[in-house]
Amino acid sequence: MERLLDEHTASAQEEVVIKEERRAGGEPVAAAEGTAKAEPYSRFQVLATMAGLFLALFFTALDQNITGTALPRIIGEFHGFDRFTWVTTAFMLASTVVIPIYGKLSDLLGRKVIFLTSLGIFLCGSALCGMAQSMDQLIFFRAFQGLGAGGIMPIAMIAFGDLLPPSQRAKMQGWMMGLFTFATIVGPLIGGWITDHVSWRWAFYVNIPFGLLALVMLLMLMPRLRFAEGRPRIDFVGAALLILGVVPTLLSFSWAGTLYPWLSWQILGLLGGGLSVLALLVIYEMRLARIGGEPILDPALFKNRVFTISSLNMMVIFMGMMGGMAFLPLYAQGVLRISATNSGLLMMPMMMAMIISSVASGQIASRTGQYKWLAVTGMGLIVAGGALLLRLGLTSSFVDIIAPMVLLGLGVGASFSVYSVIVMSVLPAEKRGQGIANMDFFQEMGGPVILAILGPIMASQYMPAYHAALPVAIKRAVPGEILSLLDKPDTLLNPTALHTLSGQFAGFGQGVMDQVLTAVRIGLAQGVHMAYLIGFVILLAGFVMVFFLPNVKVENGAENEGH
Image (cartoon, rainbow, N blue to C red; front, side, top):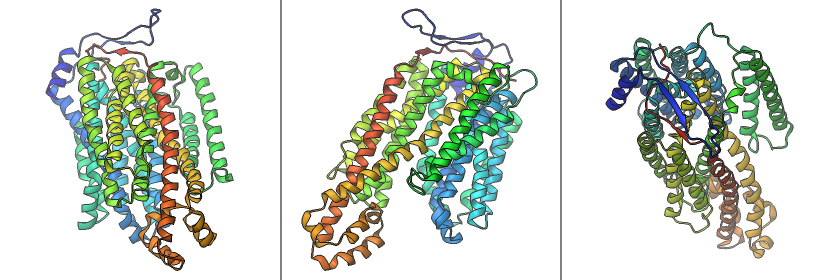
């Protein structure tokens, strides 16, 4: 940290030019220039701002993991099993839809006012969640809390870019991703302890004292970090269209194949309506840009190849990470019969690898400036991890699971430390907020999209594979209505339901149920394999795409300073 501050102070008044390698024909692939003549920030001001940002980031990340651990206790108190998924869904929808809006507003109004506003909303939401008296209240308050959380990570990331010289951004980005991953590891442990020894309400209240400390530090010492000149013109129509388009689209992906069938009128209506509004948003934003307005989603950003490829690749990487994490516990518990506790530990190597890789890649990028080849290496590791997931079968070992998860963790950590840095480097300071926020928005959209795609694929492959694996003698001896009870493999994951089912098989002879469960495991293994195969094809597309990323060379120096 001391070295970062020294380099920042030494270069704060120097002119900086972000140079990029040219293609063979000599055509520049992207360009961004800026001169810095503003007063440098003091060492104490930069240090206090970074400390406040890190504190806010840590407890925002911690909140998301603590809440999941407390949910079973909350369900028991409020009797809300039928709505418990909405506690997470409401937070996800609210936090995702506001990301581009916060990014654009930070360009127009400054990073400080937007970050403090989002942090204040998050803390108010935390207090309200802790005071909730019903499941419906908790869902509503979680959505309100999500409206604040959506601005904390992207605006903090942009503020780090404003405060640090270009060559040091990757190093700080690596530490930030390491912090988030560490919160993912310790969050469930802290949440479990709080729920067992204090109260589930303190899973939300714990954010408040530390968040208020960060709020006061940043209110007193954080620079405005505003680059736009003149009176801000806010695109209210674009913001409304964005919300009306993204919310139903995300809901359709979240509900498809679970709450409603993919081809049901509910899903088709939500998806069609959401995409229609998003198409209208694109038309409106293009028109607004032509007449010199300030669109929430600036079409000019997508003309920049660095931004477009980085955004798409971040979406693909998040898809690979979410796909691997979502189906691995199902495979471990259902196919290999590993306990729920031990299957949860399977994520630990991936998280540890992410911490190591994100910090190390940030250091390497800062020292060498080889951003593109770090992105290629990261994507290559992710593809290698995806390939090893395809080898998982009926007799795989614990090591067979750990190896692909470590590779995925190394690749994701390396990639997350690179893309935001190069996007910040090729965009002017007054466009940086919406650029980073939009990239983060595409990343977050990748999660529900990939799960909506892979979930139905896995389910459609499971049932025919299960019935095909049943021995002919079993099909003749056991009635079809009993065999059909395992047409969905979730019974295999529920010890109580499995015990009840064993009574129904007791009259057909010893070993019959074992043979049926073996067929279930075979079907589940094939279903998960097909999901991983489709995911692997998507990762391969991302690997090809990363080679088209321009090779941005970032020289040391400070860029446009806010005030």
